[in-house]
Length: 575
Image (tube, rainbow, N blue to C red; front, side):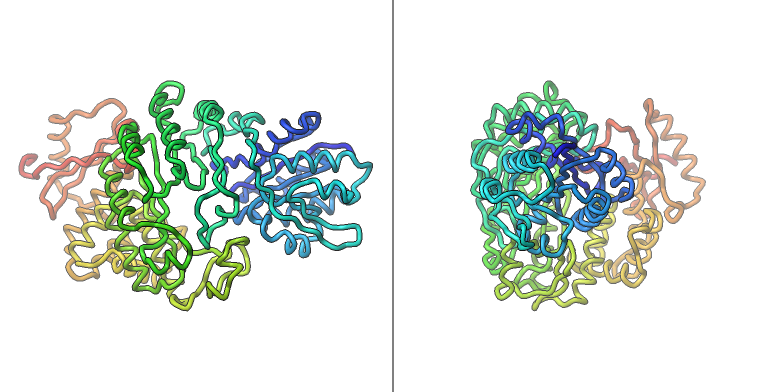
């Protein structure tokens, strides 16, 4: 057979630059170099026109096309494959990735347009597969000897039956996607890098434990790749290691390298994102993290739950006492963005237990508290063992749980609005002062406050299309209905939030015409002249009886909170 080899991925957004096809291309370059000139990577997103993607692929007249499959792109990928097979009946279509690796038989049985699946890691199996296909004279199925020598290969037999294989786990070093041009393709998008594979944990809701024991890449090649990717134009580099600090020595050497080379070979302003287990942090890791430049590091810490019975049920090993203490210590450093996670729908968690977990997590004051909903992934124990993990979930991706014996379908519905309120108010950083005031004045727990807002948003049909100004009106109206809230003080908090996060512009719902403000602005301009390229937002706060102003300049924005400094003085001094 002749023709190009296309490696395609449909990213969730343009800003996300998946390394998956570049990893496979690097595998071809390393193990089948004679075929490398035929390889082409096609990147697209699920938001593009399927017809446009189809046209881009068809123009290359491929003989083989491989797709990397994930929760967010599987449905569009399968639909695209159907159209490609109609247009090019002899085209060999092979899928890989977590969304097909653990359900290969079902995918092949239900989708005749798919010829093969490569389960597991593909850097060695894809090159062997491509070479075997292209060595044939036609598009007939692979011969048995080829099938038996390609790890993870699943597909159709001559007689129409289906064969499957265990997913491939590589124990040897894998070629770097940088060798196939990944760094050059990033172009200011979010970049991804891995320095290890496998996971020491076996959480029932996760697939990482199925990827083999942890295998750590040679540090010399890691450092080389880190310099290349940091100079690609990417401002955020995410390490996709399942548990970055599973091997403290390996992790600390990488952190030390970043610390030693930041501002030199690693450009200033680059942010490195790590997923860690917070309860196993070592003292030497704390020391390194505390030395990091402000904004150079983000940490994502998966807690999932603070209920011991729940954690035991899902085989999640976490010392929650140490975890909380370690997060507080990280937060006290004030130089990193800390992201923590909770999952809704885990075993034994009813609304009361989840609320306790949420309130505990909220008190840690991380910059982001992500409330995720349990998804029953193909290959996870929670999906394959329904007798141990009873629940109802969507039949289609992302297979989200819709009810459990502990949380009803209706409660899940409200919790989605609750999650949206947490994102809009807390995680966005746009309404932190407002939330703090409301919690104090209304004497509510964080869970009760956001649930109240969730119910209000549900009733008001607050959707994803609502503007920031419209949401400010909703928030003001809803909070004013709570006991203990005073209108002047609520407006003060909203004004502080909007000025410090929105380049100085107040929405009409917070503007009060007052002659005192014009006079105060003139005096402020004399006593505190505006710097070059600075935009100033000024307002009177009637509850606090102060003049509030925020000076906006790109270089003065806090990279941790994404907000600008609020200045306040007594109104009397400007009258």
